[in-house]
Length: 308
Image 1 (cartoon, rainbow, N blue to C red):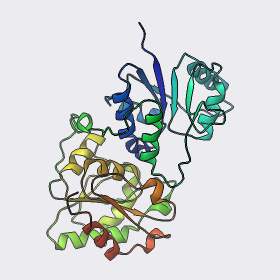
Image 2 (tube, rainbow, N blue to C red; image 1 turned 30 degrees about the vertical axis):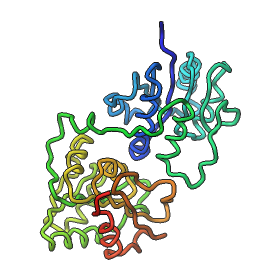
Image 3 (cartoon, rainbow, N blue to C red; image 1 turned 180 degrees about the vertical axis):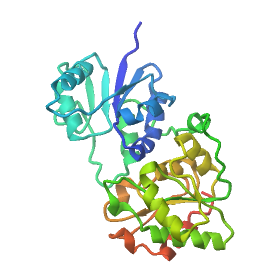
């Protein structure tokens, strides 16, 4: 007999997916008798296929509204007999997807007008907690905590961050206002060098310029920019002394490992919704991220060093 089917919609970005780990694990724990499919962006499909919570991962290229073949494909997909659709994206796009449904037998959990199971008011609720509420409404276990063992055990987990401070000075190129200045990261690195710590810089190839700017003033940093998979990052973070970075995906991942993790925020980030979640995660914020001082960052990090 075929299992009933649940569709979870979560496109990304990386930080959003990481914030959803507990929700994904909780849905799996509470719905062992269901076939669970994740609809996500192509950039994250291979990563999500390795996760233990989904029976299937389907790519959504998020085509333009004028790309009729892709829209018809998505309409057929959404009309293919789902018991439940759990919309964790809650975007204008997924509101349109809700309109594709033709069967009242499919329960839709989300914010779309006419959803059978509308979410409560999530104003001021952290994104991770929002998603746990959503999966609890769909029969998941909101108390489940996700393990990262499936990720840290990958073949590319060879980097050792033992007792090092990991800096994540980059972020989305579309939001440069989220970046604490490179000079601030360099000053922070040099303060850790004075304390006898190793300092490692990580990021993607797109972060090359900002990493180079940090290293011009702090040349003793170990440069791993563009050299770390997500597996390697988990391994680095898990053994590190601390992680400090901007509002970007790897910082959310670091927080999940339990390492002391400090996110430096500006006015683009609302901590009530987007603060990293972890046993020793915290943040420091000014409306202009450049106004966060070195001492404020050092003091905020110090409060995270106490075991939770």
